[in-house]
Length: 369
Image 1 (spheres, helix red, strand yellow):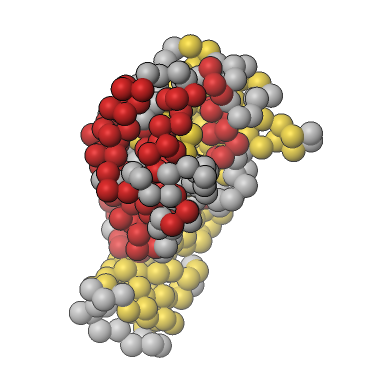
Image 2: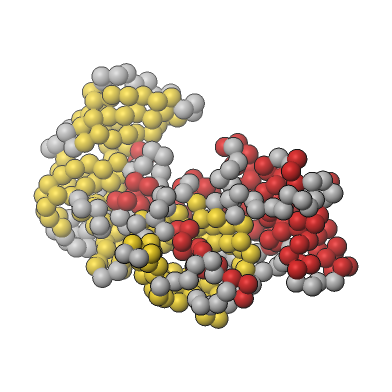
């Protein structure tokens, strides 16, 4: 397996820039997620890493070797597509064996490695069946088997579970992660599903309009988003944003909302003008004594929890709390926001204001540490 390093990677299609100067490193053995909405550049980035697209500029290093201008066949990687891409005239055994036979691997070695992969993926019982009659899940296992059997330096996967139904998709996500852990493989995985990224990934790159918005571990990105886009894209429901005007000075540890003092982590640098206070629904609670008031305009029952939609002078927001809490439509409630989990954003959404200083392109981005 191998470390993969991307430096200032850019891809232009005529006047359209699909990927803008991306830089990040995928460590050896990581399960790495490229996450973002449709058209954000994540698949184009993966295809450049795999050699299916040539970059306009930038460098790609796989296991220390610069490969940006090399063919896909020269990069020692395996690609798993969303639509399986199996050979319909071959049975399962021959589909899995095909990459080895095309490389001239000996018959005994092919049989040994196919049997090993089939055992890992629990498909030994279907090795001699035609692929046409298999379920979507079994076909995806065969596609994975064909990639694994080569023992490449890295696995690249472009939404491989996208064609499966929701229940089986969750099951296959668990299996994929378990398979990765057994093999200690370097895996790069494209998805638009933030729950899938959080469930499976060691690290996540969040992309938007060809730009890397944030890069880090799932909990780090969820708890401390660097931009309003990341805060809104991750989470279901996403982060709430409460609007406010004012000035925050370095060292300030509270703000005023509707005459109520709200504690925030101490700020290293100040900000002024239009600001937004970001807080996740699970960090909103009710407090009758609070001056920060809101009206209940919706209640969504989810079994053990409920999502309560509220409207306030600073904007609408949602709260996630136990279903045991009785709440009625039209009820006026006081709100408390957990000060340990508040992020202050400049209202243009380009940066957050908090305790830790991180770099984002040419500007300083401030976020909580």
